[in-house]
Image (tube, rainbow, N blue to C red; front, side, top):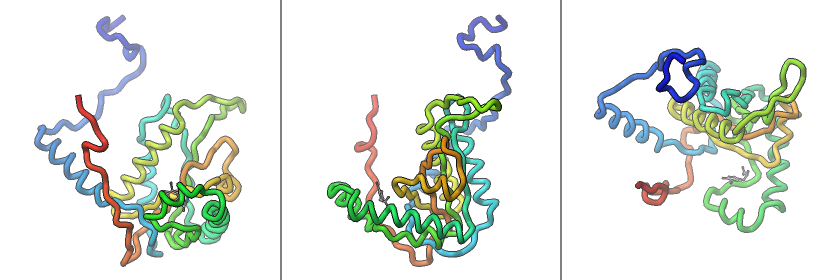
Length: 230
Ligand code: IYR
């Protein structure tokens, strides 16, 4: 063995030097604060402008999403970017049908009470107004060249992290997004012609906010509420 102090097997696999910027600690502090100061302005937006967004912005945000740490580097995700008005219309129609069911009968009273401060209902006009819908699919398993199932690991964690990075990249770019979860959302497989092993994870609505967009007056939690230190 080349490097006997190395207890893992990294000596046996091809490696490259880490491409890492090292900053003085004050700079690291400044960058952490600056990132937070920007991210604290991210809000889930429901009033979108029809203003068009160049596709390369979405593509670069998707490239960021694809940098997410993920189980066994299998990238168990697929993103379908929809700007076609007819497909958006079909998605809205199907989503509103599920949502009607949800708000009228499927949701428990407890759930509706939890949602009340957000003012949501079964009407989803933003699914047609916003320039892009990104349907995020989780690839529950893979399929190899022989058509055999390939097991995927930590699918939910991986796709969740990738989605978080995507939302962050969209906000950082200066656009707004809305995480929409019509449930069930298997209709997305049919409309977007995705295979059965891809499970719809989330529908992300992306665009510029409407000029006078309003958002619910909600608060974020304080550090003591969300963290503990030893
Ligand atoms: N999917 C429904 C309900 C909904 C559920 C949760 I949890 C939210 O945070 C927001 C909405 C809808 O989109 O209206």
